[in-house]
Image (cartoon, rainbow, N blue to C red; front, top):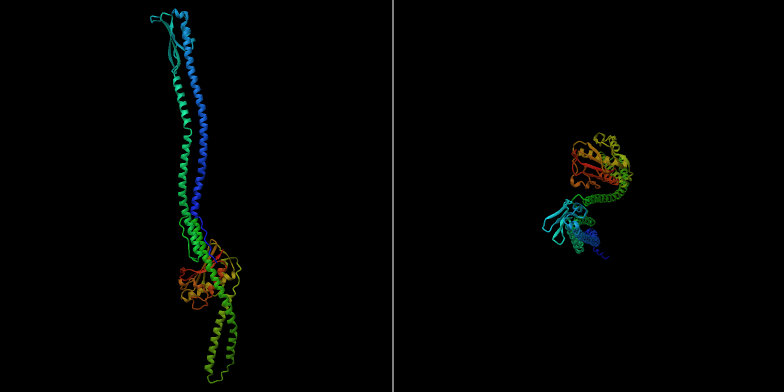
Length: 491
């Protein structure tokens, strides 16, 4: 079969960087376009408004100038009119104060004779600081007399005219630079976009590097596991979601590895079960004929020869040995039968205290079992009959281990619950299990006892696994000084 060529893919880091840059640049670019349009629109509106204001200001200046000219013309007209009055020409006015009060803008009046002396005069106070005086002279007669008139006019009119001129000049200047101002803002905004794009790219590269590095570690670990390296684990630092994912991934690999070992163990046990069933069948059949034949030989011998006493003793010893060995073979066959015909697990809710306390009903080891129950009851899903078989096997092994070690034969049972698991520990006072045998001790026909078939723990662990739990031996010694067997079951 031709090997599939691996499709070249775009690195995730590049994808994240491009996506982040586009995410930042797109709205800024659209905003720049809108700002340009808004700037042009605003400039057009401002230009129109400025043109309208300029016309208004120019009209105001013209109105001021017309007012000044009109005022000057009015003053000259008053001077000409008063200069033709007969009483003024005779230097004998009769109503100067009234003239000052009646004539528009007139504040003071003097009649000066040809020799320079004042023939008559009248005046009133100026209206205020916003007003100033201007003088106007008109000839009185041909002899050189004069009529001097003082009018009050606005003191701020020149400043007002200058302010209007400055406003017009400023408006005209703004109209001339109307296109440069929005363009400057637009260029500044484009520069801001460029800086933001560079920063976004830098942050994108940094963030994607940190992110993809962790993802790459996860991928590499998964590939290593898929290639058969079941001990591979990922190490991700930090407290973010990817670190939590790495921890969960490692937990999943641990569970997967444990499940794989359990499946392999069950497969080996399945092979042993087939062998055990066959051996039980093959060994059981000849046992009875052998025993009957020996019994018949012994019963048939009458003891009539010269060596009767010696031969009779030898025959009796032979019978005892054969029957003892046949009994051992029967026990082995029973064990084979048990291994080869384990019933299926029928799990149901079961309170652990009820099952464990029933162990003390067995008179064989009732006084040798110490129980340390938890504060709260623990309920598991288990097959009561099979669970009692597992616990009885562990208790019997513990008692035998203590007796073989020459110490107390007591066994301590504790149980508790954490998360979704119940844990039962069985501690003995024996010599313990060597560290190199903590895994192989559950294999069929492996035992640390002087007597035993090596099938009890194998059957017990198989039952535990079929319950959804497991049976193991702690690598550390129990508080009692011996071995600690740990049985886990689902709550």
